[in-house]
Every structure is written in structure tokens, then in C-alpha cells.
Length: 327
Image (cartoon, rainbow, N blue to C red):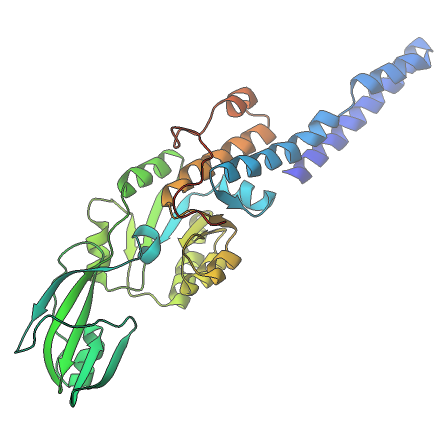
């Protein structure tokens, strides 16, 4: 937009010089030429774009949305496709045990260790804890079909002495107000919203219930997320939102990468163009709305309306530090 303004300024300057020269030529008074040059100084046209964009960056920061420069701000205003990671982005990212199903003679006093799976010896017995597929392979049994009890569920299986003993179901709860957030994003012009996750398809489909996402892509590796972003870019500008190290390549490949900076990985925040400095995904609404209004001001489209109204997504308009804000 700054280069476009410069081109308009050159045309404007040419016309101004012609008018000033004509005024001097027809009147014989050089003061008339100076008067034309003074009145027609194009400073407002030249300054409109950088001032509007810098004001937009400041306004977005008011809502704890850190936009890394004017170029990402302009790109954010033109986004038509949104790709969301699941764990830690669309969900809270802190799984809690919601049920324990036992098989055999063991009690429910079991300690779950985060990770793909662990194996060890406890009181002389070989114990394996982890994902259903991992545990089944270690125990030498078929991968069990485990029903998903609610959206965002994660299954941790347990085997003792190569015998499958049961599983724990952990739920990573969906963020509150997610449906309203997605509806608000569609009102701002996002025509396509997708879920991209490395979790099992059954879990991803359960998360999608009631959200009305346009597509769900499950069991994706980091390079497959990048391929998804590149594929969607063929249809228009793409924004990718994520929080983990495995999301960093996709964030860098998107037109706009948005990182959950409050509890997300440093690698994702480094690769992203926009960082949400609080653990609230709904900050996307005022961030995008601010970018769109800043762009309208810079292009001199409805400047009065864009300059006087506040983003509707934040009702109180306060700059108080929300819970989970980074220093």
C-alpha cells in the first residue's frame, strides 16, 4: 500500500507542477505558481498509509495482539481461509483424566507419564503406558477400538506383563465460546475454516461437532500441515493458528501465522507473524477487525467510520491485563 501511495503521489505531483506552470504562464505572476504548490502539497497523501498502519499496530497491541510490522497487518486484513491447530489452540491444551476403565485385577491407582509411551518394571512386573497403538504393539495384541466419550478426548492405554489391562480417557476441553468465535470470524469475511491436527480422526470429528468447520484434517505430521497450508493458499490468503513446535513450519508457510504466545512454544512465536499474548483465541476477532479498519483508512475508504468505531468483539474496550498474559 505504501508503494501504491507513492505511485499516486508521483501522478499527483505531475499534475500539480503542470497546474503551477500553467498559472504562472497565463498570469505572468510567479506567486500564483507558488500558491498552487503550497496548497497542493501531497503530504497527507504520502503520510496516510504509514500513519494508519502504525495506528493499527498500536490498536491491536491494546487487545494483546502483537503484529510484527505493517506488512503482516495488511495481509491480516485480506485473509479468507483459516486453519486451526487443535491441541492448545482450539482446545485448552491441558488434558484432565475424566474416566478410568480397568480390566483385570489392578486398581485405579495408576500414574500417567506424558509422552508417546513408556515401558518399565514395577515390583517385578513389566508395565507399558502410552497411546493405544504403542501399548498394543508392546503387548503383542491387536490395537483396541476405543470409543471417544467427548470432544478432545485422548486415550492412554496400560499393559502389564504383555497383557492389556485397560485404558484411561483424558479430555482436553474445547475452549469456551469457540462457536461464537468462528461465527464472528465468518462475519469478518473468512470464507473457509479448517481444523488441522495430529490426533486421531475420531477425536478430531468429535471436536468438530457443533462447530460447522468446512473441513477436518486429522493424523497430520508437521510436513503434512505445511502441505495443507500450501494447498489452501491456491484459493486465497491463508492464516494458520498454532502453539506447538510442530506447528512452526506451517505458521511460516502461511500468509499469516498466528501463535498462541502465552503458553505456546517459543519456536512457534518466532515463526509467526502475529502473536496472541494472552491465552484467549477470541483475540483474533479484534485483531482482524483492527487490521481491516486500518487498511480502509489507508486506502481512504470510509475513514471517519473506521477511525471512530471500536471493534465490536471486545465489549468493554479495556486494556487491563487478562489472565495468562505474558509480561
